[in-house]
Image (cartoon, rainbow, N blue to C red):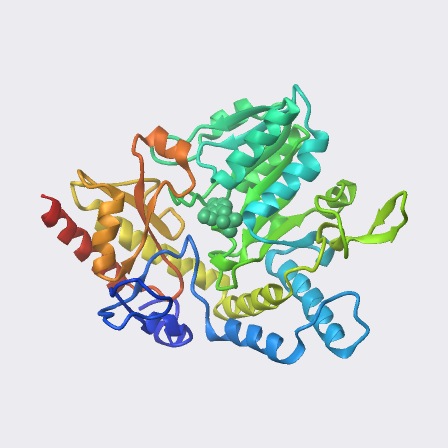
Length: 420
Ligand code: PMP
């Protein structure tokens, strides 16, 4: 039994009926498709339920229009839907209101927004930015480069042998020079869940700000930015049943008020003269130009879908599958898994089969219709530390089953025989 009604959920995702395996020559299904799709690449991008596609279709068929400036009927409908999408996201993560919710393109842009608008203005030599060794490049590269430009110092909290954040090391690094701590909530490579409340308290005790990268957590468990007491939080719509092209930046209102805009242009201004300009209220001050209207409406529908299931239930399903996959894979002597044990991780498992490159393994898995990711998962320094160039990652979501993981394991077995 599963915490989720799997047949009913799967029925909402037409793509899961696809067969794959034919030549990839033209867009759309190939004529000689053979294997049922087993989609285990959810940490990269999740699939889209009919409710979300319907919301997008309704927008484009019924009220497609630009927002904010229109007096006409369609523009008013689009404006309300766009604004209400901010309210829905605020409610979803426990923010105080739409002022604290900025729509961006993705998690990466949310991170860059803060790094440019706050970091470039505020960081100076002597300041410390603390990251973890398991940061995604979205956070690692961004703060590394902004630190270079400002003369701030970057330090990395050690990840121990079992994949946990070394909190003793964190307490050493986070001292009174701290300006920003930017840590991933759930590692997209190790599956580690970081103690974000403890890190936020530690950071605030020393007068710094904290930014939590929620790209893997917001889709898979209940999130409450208020309870975490985080200053910033970011995630992407496309990893939580929503469309591509929308990300969220949450920021505490008083901090966002104090920041200068990141992008300039239309929609973000109040008054413009040839000499100077003033800014709109939050969140519009940070949403220059025509915003991500359709995507925001799609994200709203995705949140409705997830909350109909319940985020506690989503989390329970993720943990069940992660533990099952971890136990199956780590039972093999020649499979190395990375990160904490099965019962204590987010819904993904990265691994390597001894003697087989992750890319070769993933090609074999592809022959079985199993879609997984092979590579460095945008955590190159972490792979350097582990001592492997790449890994294979299976990641799960609300529609996945144990049988699909069994199929993954069968395909790994086949790869072993082939490369023996
Ligand atoms: N952080 C983490 C932990 C991620 O897993 C990802 C996506 N792989 C990102 C950031 C970046 O997300 P996006 O590509 O949507 O900006």
